[in-house]
Image 1 (cartoon, rainbow, N blue to C red):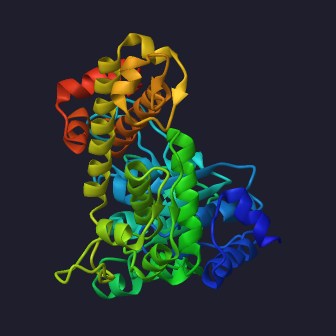
Image 2: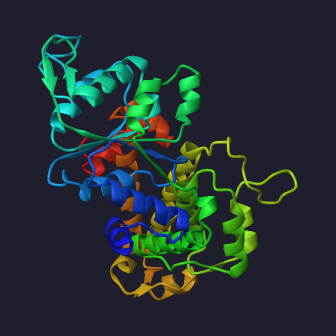
Length: 382
């Protein structure tokens, strides 16, 4: 099986030996109907591997369902996975199929499997051993034939010792283990990914792409990257937003990375988690701020300028006012791109918060009234 074709098909960037080994293991185990445990740090790209296993296995024409176990409240996780009968609990106004019934014959990806409650772990073990399960509120045993691929960033053996994870379930899940390398150990892949993210940002928001000086590349490569690929993408997005068209220097990289008291960018200890929520909120505020600036400049230039030629490298606002046959820095397409970014940010926040508008407004640091207005303006279906 051609590893390069697999990488192209699933959009995997990188050539590090550890990454290629993980892809090879996924391709080799795909035709063999065994349970697989994918381990690796948060943000390292574990979600690619169950897709590889499903697409190159015998179940590829059946359903593939991905479940984030950490995102489902403990009180409803059994209902989500196994289904429930009408009247089995408050709000159960009708019977409902669970993921195991829906995925019969296919593959189920259980992300953050270590977050499952112990009672749910017992139910999952029964499915793995016999293919049997009970809906919540039912005494009728049902059968399912589902291949399980689980993933975690937790040391499950340590969790077993602490009594947080069942030992028998651990051995059932880890028939085959695939270790996804963290970004810090992938060498030249860091530069490849940074270039890819910079190109994606430029194409999506119609900005000039950034490039990286050799010293900047070295600074990126020696950084610890506790948030892995996800953190690198956030950093490159920020650099692309504020330094469009520039060659990024080492000092610029060090300015944006976490620093210690000596003022030097340093690897963050492995146990320290990146505050992805803070990074997400910061990017949201940057989009809002830039959008407001574009609107203010467009209003200052006047309505005529919105329909004319794109002058991307003009920085003299006064000259554009004097010669209105130009669109200030391509304001119209840029504003549209920023509006699309804002719309997508609202959709993502609603998804993270399961449609809860109060939580979403707090997540985005805006008022509830503003959130409702944006939902209406962007015709977002909640």
